[in-house]
Amino acid sequence: MTEEDIELDDIAEEAISKKRNVKDILVEMKDTSELMIDLAYSALLTNSTDIAEEVEDLEELMDNLQYEISILSMLAARTPEEAADLSGILQVARSAESISDAAGGIVDVVLRGVGDHPIYQTLMDEAEERIQKITVEPGSCLEGKNLGESRILSATGCYIRAIKRNGKWIYNVGKKTVLQSGDLLIVTAMSDSIDIFKKMCLP
View 1 (cartoon, rainbow, N blue to C red):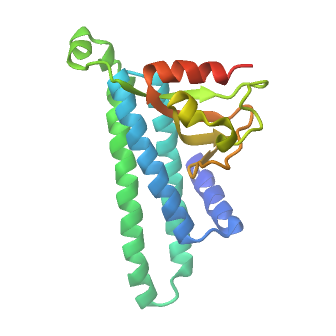
View 2 (cartoon, one colour):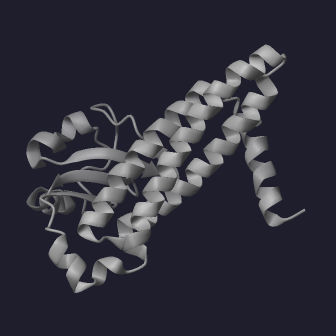
View 3 (cartoon, one colour):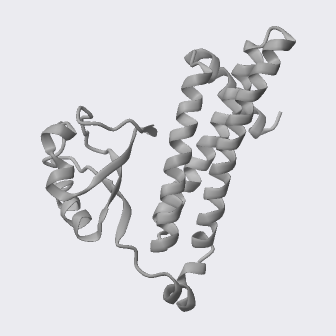
């Protein structure tokens, strides 16, 4: 048995043990693919290898979700009719995974260093809106506060698109979402706003 086979077995066991349903996985695939497209275009326009590498990590997550939903669908199908119904769901999942592959293709331009070429730089105007990864440092004024209390959007103009916490992504970010030290924030804003927000994330 290869290392890849062992990894796939682990994914299958985790999918069964977590008792997640197909709907939950489809929602996560939708949210993940949307975030990947946002990040991919941002990486391209700003020639950011940092953001491009995050897209690569998300692409691996999407591959795992695709495998997970396939396993659950096969286990759920008890009759030919149910299998036929589930095939439509799997088609949706494959389409979402194709979107993630496309995002990976976009950032490949950045990771191959094409964006460093002077001609590329002249073709790509600096984007007014930026997407960046910002970490909430221990001792930050934002630590332990929810977004409603912090009023980040009104105070800085920054919008938190998603949060990566302990290797897991949080997509449904709202006013009640509490920030913790170590949170990796995917932030969308104008350039000057991001600089202000970065200072708030520092101790």
